[in-house]
Image 1: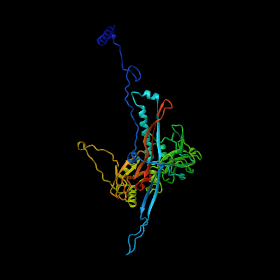
Image 2: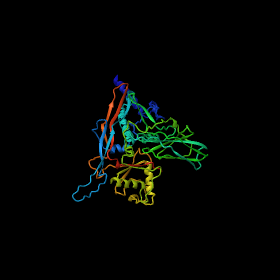
Image 3: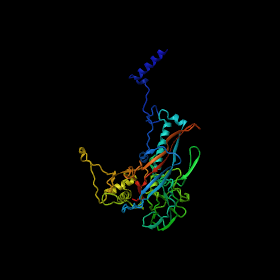
Image 4: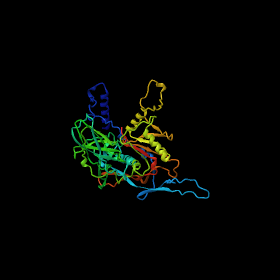
Length: 497
């Protein structure tokens, strides 16, 4: 019987392959991806189309061995601080020198994020993606992105306070403003608050300021994976008092506020008194208002308190620079643009380099900038009257072709002759330029790093016990950023365009 079946199938196949098409079944290509007999051409695994950029985390040394609740260290900040002269007379002893010291400490902070995979998600992905491993990987990557942001601009100790009341001037014509009284409120923003509203584009793509959904963070109440909750500052200062101005139809409003040290953005609300709505986010402390605010967030919805610090963060590099007693270089542009020095350079950079050398006999090695600022500085240098020298590389095999565009990749410190790398940082706010030093000044002894991450516990993963039909994962670390010699760092901030 078995042989008969096999012989029958063989005859059918031969008939289908013969010239006689009467026994052949006709098949045509399906007209859509979900009909007919066809396979599904799916590449595995899923493409991971998201940025994970952590240049500072990658660069700063990580050292284990931390314990207790905070790291403590003492710094000798000066010797012979009274500049006692060294000359002595015959038979007498010399003058007595004094030195200065400083007590430094920084509390450890736990960092961590969580993710989960349902049983059904695991079933569905079999043969395509190990979603449990992917969940852990993406949680670690997400944690590193947030850690980078904290390393740059975390703030646990530097309160921004109350935003100064704006000054308003009605001027010009051609705007879309109607005649009447306009009330304006300003809120200074720390780095995390600024990026929350303006968009960070690190860990996701396509982020931008959308006034239809933008919300300046005040006090954040977060529900955690275990059902507990935390409350902490979202990074915004207390809002300013309202300033008022009367405009005629078509006039602009020039609004300006005093710079808040440690702020990297400003949220502007305007409208009728008591009905001010979010209308703009700026990196400099000035704004030209030309139309009614289109945002949905009302200034009245913000808490009447300073929410600029978080007890769950450690102080990042920008915060440690901005602290009044840091000794770091700090320059406020007050909304003014950088200017050419007339010799192929930037006047504000040259002033910084002179200050670094005159006070501490050192030079930074890197300038971290915002992407838009790199383009602006390159244009400023190329357009200066100093006529900088350019080296052009020509392909001898294609000599008639030129490559347009020049990028500022490094900058020469005219004081010391050192060449500084100019690097775009994904989280650097527009209008802020950070000077970073990797190497120690020759005269500083006994310190191996200028900055370091001291950990009580390096990255670790937890797979929590099952409580539902869902796998739950956490990725954590416990650490603090120690700035041993902040005078080797600095920034120019609040620069306009």
